[in-house]
Length: 478
Ligand SMILES: Cc1cc2nc3c(=O)[nH]c(=O)nc-3n(C[C@H](O)[C@H](O)[C@H](O)COP(=O)(O)OP(=O)(O)OC[C@H]3O[C@@H](n4cnc5c(N)ncnc54)[C@H](O)[C@@H]3O)c2cc1C
Image (cartoon, rainbow, N blue to C red; front, side, top):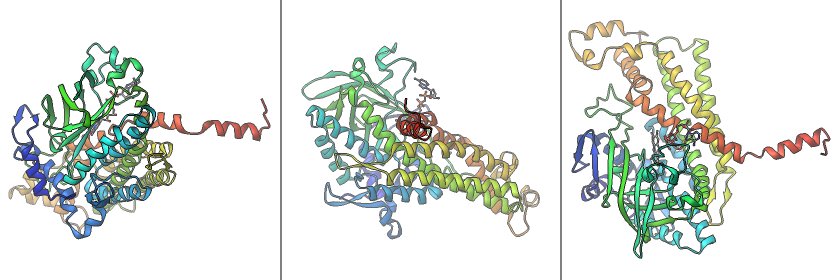
């Protein structure tokens, strides 16, 4: 059965026994720990949507791999139309729910990379990947992505680090599989997943071939430890004070591998350093349109909040505010346009997978994410200083102080103070809270930084044709 219910998902998590620490405590059961409740609700939401008639069409796919309906999480998107569908759903959904699922691009990246390695080296990585994905699809399992290593001294290659474990690497190969040591950083939602997928985070050379390793294993495999950062949602959230973090609240992990055994059937790269550039290329080609879609949708959310608070405050006609909201709309459309352009301009990989244009999507993401950072400041300016100085909800609930808050936080006559406060708390979460910091960092660092976008455009944009055109125009023949 390719589609689980949220109850079945929670039962399946209970059966796993990952080694998880959070906020100084060891967790025996993530499904009952207070630190995971909000994140679990968010994870369950994705299962619930597949059973809701109005959302089913967006979140259920047909898998030719197992000839069954599968969840949008586990579907391998080979067709251009499938990828368009994912992005359209994200664009619509993230403007209201913050996050849909960018990890779903993982299988596409592994699909193309394993195909390339097999063709060149006669290995059978793709066959293993397909068998693995049949299981993931049938059981509707979740996976997290462990790509980023701790990296130690950034100026040194993995094998030149003072501590060899600062990048995940193979320490033993035997007839049954490999043994790995090291760690991955920032593994989002790992303790709420069933499997962790690992891959190298950069180009490697021959001396680093033991660091060229990719595999998937259950999160409760012996030797794995997750040191988890609680999500930005408080453990006792209030719908009024925490309207954003109650909806979107991933936990993040340092994931340590201490002599972890991985059977060969779960290994998708083991020493092929000369294909790490392919992996990074595909990761960038699939990851950047997804991230740009997310930022475009979140920019839509900011534009909506800015328009509503300016109306509540009676300044919606102020020209500088209209101008700023207009800029938000333009940046959102540019980001989204680049996403659509990148997919329209996809190239067909010999494995049968369409790969989006890497330069257009990186350019779109670079532009929108930097504007997004500015827009958070603009939203704060449009909402005013109350975003950081207003009383907390407890004082609004206190009968002694509420009348004063009702009176002095009133703006336009036809808008209740309570509605205005609800919106201000939302803007506070987006711009001036622990959630706001996470929101900002997710725009700047997640799925690579703006500098990586710049590098991808530099590498892939066809500047030579432009130079030759200019030489032709000027009749320069040298
Ligand atoms: C909310 C969030 C969720 C994330 N989720 C995941 C996840 O699920 N899985 C995952 O694998 N990763 C995840 N990431 C990690 C993300 O991909 C990285 O944060 C990002 O790629 C930047 O890497 P870094 O954080 O190690 O920064 P660094 O690499 O330390 O970069 C810091 C600065 O140093 C510069 N720099 C680094 N190395 C060099 C160098 N050699 N030469 C010149 N300049 C250099 C960078 O350009 C940057 O300006 C997540 C990140 C965030 C914020």
